[in-house]
Image 1 (cartoon, one colour):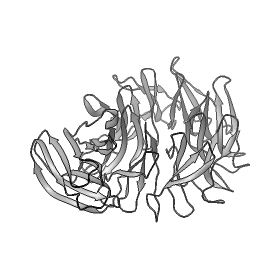
Image 2 (cartoon, rainbow, N blue to C red):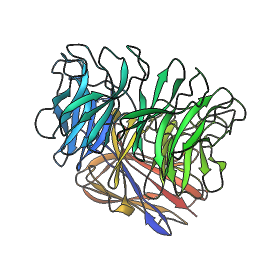
Image 3 (cartoon, helix red, strand yellow):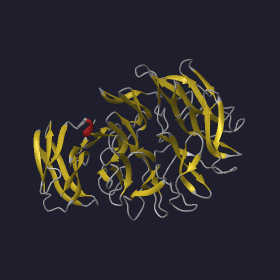
Image 4 (cartoon, rainbow, N blue to C red):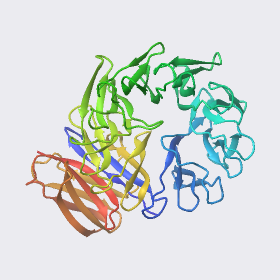
Length: 498
């Protein structure tokens, strides 16, 4: 079992810091457990992962550690599918999710956090699968997509009070599927993307009060599909991406009355938004503005911003100035946004932006040009969980903590500080260890060039002061990385040379 913490510090007028850590090497070695469906359940983290023995099953991170909660499908087969960009739904004292016990197909399950998970609703009777995928909680009920074998895939609801599941729609009449996706709650209605032969895949809304379903807008008029996706509520509007023949895929908003196209960065029928999949979080609100991953007409996945106050769209930054930045996940935290991006040197890594100045890479989690591909950010209090890969663990569950919110370290059992920061000369990396460890310290500039490497050195328990020869470095931001002797990233942070 391996546990590590990535801890960072940056002093710019006031002290701020970020700490990222791999929570646990669930699937030992470099294969990775590929955590999915992360959800906050009280003070605990619930998710699915593959430990290499039981398939994708239910895992729990609580005060006792990170452990397999239940093997719902006791065979080696998985009870969960490895579908990205999905979560679970918490209602009352239970958490709801789709699972397959090996005999009932994929149906709606619930778990109280203690006892074995139970089948909440078997929509498709027998061994056939209802194909439950997305689950969303709203006012004591769970809304989800399912196929009962008679009406195709439609919108369903599970009443947690009466423990009853009911089909709500038959948008594509009869046995044909409506292909429900991108379920989101805005104001008092449940919005989703659905298909009919007449309208294609468009934006629909279900009203729980009147038990009625309406087509919100036929954005791509006629039988063509605008395929609304990436739905997210920011402020008092619903934002999403949609496609038309005339403009490609663009950023849209809906205020409860009107659907409006907001962007056309890649002019004409070229898509402004290209790097996406169903449910992917590529749109985020921050400082009363809307940030998204956009295409400049040549390369895609750069950081753009739309200002609702002015109606203007602007490029924030190209992490890769000559190629694709490949942003595919954006998360808004209390005082910044975090996202994954490629700078053409370090692969796809974790970046942050404070709303002013220039975005900066937080850490090169998978050292060198190989991508760690951070994805599926989930914030719980002052900690952000996400999935990423490093050379020692493969794709595992990582965490990031902001010390300005009172979190310094979690699992590495070490205190890491860099001072002075900013520095006009050399800097000192102070690492206090609980036990003797062999570590490697390296420093790279923002272009990914290694400017210092200590080699593997044995450090004693207690405080170790490591000199970083920054005096001869050019002014700028640098990233330090502390790795174990087998290459596992233990700590990473930033310091400024003035």
